[in-house]
Image (spheres, rainbow, N blue to C red):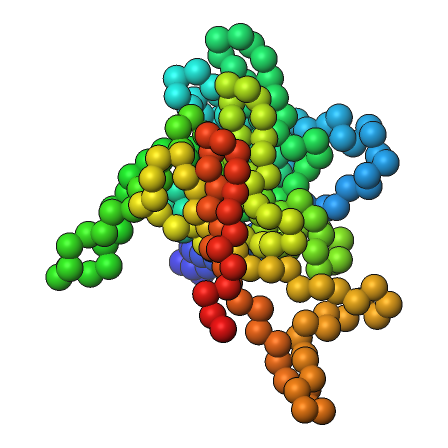
Length: 259
């Protein structure tokens, strides 16, 4: 009887240990965020590599690739997902890079020349319903960008911590798989904040915010404070609306709506 009790206790201890390890590993992934080590710009050998998050190689059998518009196979390198996201499925998809394969011609395109922090990506033509409660009617959000892939990504280590992650400023890219062209649609010196839905066809409208200027001498952000009558007070950087026409490739910045 005593041996039986000891055996049951050891099995219970093993199960608890496995669960604790698994949960701790999961918490570390989502608490720290998905990070990509900043690569040296003169490291040409690394630029040629497309490493996976765990194995260093691409595994086309891992189920993360998907076919878009029945013609293009999109493979996210080192995919991690979590709840949320701007796309139709409500899932935020992080990756190091994206690879597009034209199934008709066999042409392969690596979207970014080196690894970046892809915060989210999704096809730009969809409609999704948002349910806030059981009383009001569901709200429908639509985006109508014809055969375009929308990508939200951080490509610059804006906080100089040596990694690219959710803490860095993000910009919006639009990829045309037919022409194999990736376009940074945002104005220079701005960061992405939000997508405005229900606009006209092939019009991408964003809420953006100007990136604070950083002092070259002290690496301190002077925008945090401004002097008013001899006193230092917080400086507010207002949000603006940016509209980009996918067809013409022309963008328009609204300017601040606040005085």
